[in-house]
Length: 508
Image 1 (cartoon, rainbow, N blue to C red):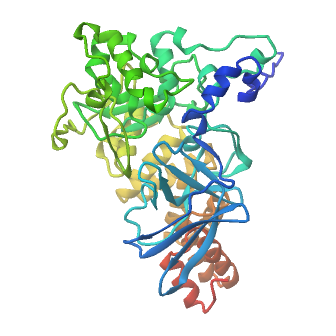
Image 2 (cartoon, rainbow, N blue to C red):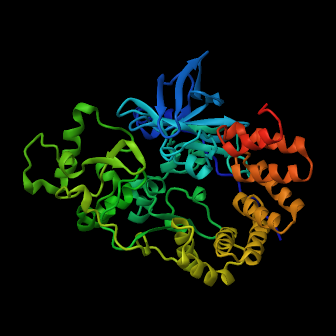
Image 3 (cartoon, rainbow, N blue to C red):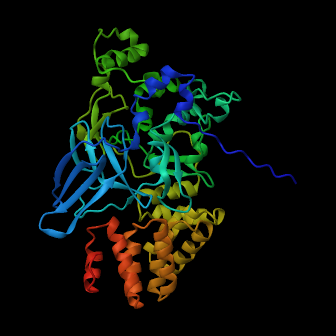
């Protein structure tokens, strides 16, 4: 048998496109998509704010050309420090969040600059926090919708090569496919507008559709998707049945558009490219006419007077879920604006979004994603297990549901099976460690927690448990070092500070 090695897919970056397409390159470089990530460098609006729930005061400043976040809780000497901000996510059209690189592990900083209001405040998801933490990992699945040519280190949760991405922003190849062969004159590129509707729409949906749950197919990864393919071959999306309205999500444009009367009546003729030029954005003084002209392409019989702002009435800007200082355009295109309290979330039954085929595995994982105590998830995943006995995602989710129900023997068996298939699953390792520790299998628990922390050193639960286990074995120095390392990422964690104090040791 002759084994053929497939050549790696070659990405060449936007600069390679510029030589033959200079006008498009210059225009696209000014779009929000092209500016959705990058190194911070010397670009940081200075600022200061107090976060009431935590009593923390944050300051953003530049020093020697580098950006820093300073934090302190007045009157509390144990909670103060400084952390460099290395990268940003977000085009600044609505806001811009920042990333910390600690030993090349990427984490989201707890501060965001909200461009529309020109203020600093805590990042989405940190609003109710009562302590300072920097332990929210930035995994490839999140980073990929903001940056191009990622360099994740396999086997870790959130560690990357330096730099973590080779190209800032969303590159040309995200929509047109890898350009290596084309740059050599040996192949063409994908033109989204010439694809069949489902393949065309998939290109935008890879980043602008989230649904209530997004489940990767067995042995497929969203990162493996290439323009021109069917996104549904890689991922299944789920929404709640009967939902006619829902809150505005930053990644929900495709879902909103699908609910609109415009899309439902025009069918596949209407798509993102009907209104948006992916290579350019209209100048502010041209926006009203630009989008009105696109509406009138279908609604010409209405003879709308010139200069009327169609989008201003029928695509209102609204508050984004979980982002209390940001607004985005509502793509459901309501004919009449409904009062804000009339949203109909529908039932709590999950259904596939669009024409997708799904099985018990996908639906069970979807229910597990939206609820950690879902009886429907338990039933479906148990039913699917015989056909997917080596599926690490299913095994981990089902193990957790068994653990929640108190069946620790079954949970441990499933976690072990998941780790045999994919040893890098940190959730399985951390949870199995807890079960082993409860059974007195301390050496096994320590090994599991240490392995998980090598893959993401900011796992607070694993580090606390490991510190306690090491202390119980008399390994005081190792326990202290574990807790000190955790405080680099979770510097305001009371339990870690208390344990160090009980051992009579300083934080450093």
